[in-house]
Length: 138
Length: 199
Image 1 (cartoon, rainbow over the protein chains, first blue to last red):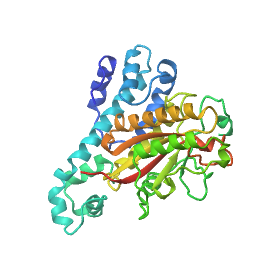
Image 2 (tube, rainbow over the protein chains, first blue to last red):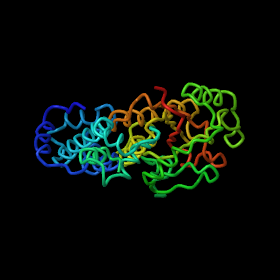
Image 3 (cartoon, rainbow over the protein chains, first blue to last red):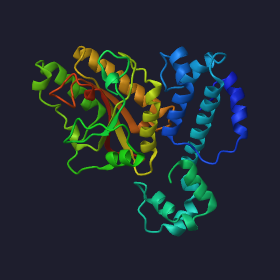
Image 4 (cartoon, each protein chain N blue to C red):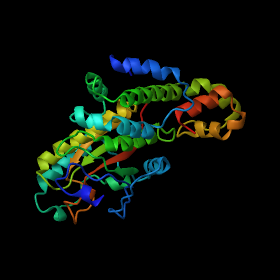
């Protein structure tokens, strides 16, 4: 998740100041990249694939020509995905006490604990609720 | 959409459909997250044990053993239709494994499903499939490269745990519509649930 250097770093500084209420879904992230960066990808990075950081590297190498909206949205997408991944990783720690309190007898696995916690939203702690939201699991 | 489906055009058509076991040609334009998750979680008792290696070998064996017209070839030795699965159509550059921006959202929607808590404890095989245009050898190679590209996007850009995914190119060896082997419905990416992730 290392951001490429160059102009994208500047855009990152700008994006970080805005508060993010909700993380975007991966589908939304993909759609936003296609919309904001599609023309530049077709023009400058037509032989570069989405994965492995190669697309970001190519757009960065062409930063002087790439639309500013593309740069800003790419950074926003990366930030949102990072936030979502961190929430998914943190969830069992953050929600441990809630699960012990509210989901006794639930067999862990297959999403059982998460659905228990989502059903119990009204009485789940604020931190746990926020983490579930950030994880995209609502 | 019809114009995009023309063979020789830059891209294949974009559509997604549940791998409707009985109705191969049914293609919807979009699938909701819930539909994808549902398609991938319906594990059956008699699902065969499938590994990427065995599937790759089955495709290769099929390509070498049956040289007749596509409509007369028997199905692949491994019965994939018993696995929980979805079918998606991803737009690639012609004769290339480059995923076109138009399909980024589709890859994202697969990532959403794979990140769903219901599916997080499971492993998946991504298969690439072509129609019968071109040689079988090239189709095996191209479909492997395309499946690899989808897997790479999922495991890097969209953060799916690489231990949960494997990619297999099936070439033209597992046609969806054997009566119309050159039909674009055969050009597709499939995702199969191959059981719990070993811890």
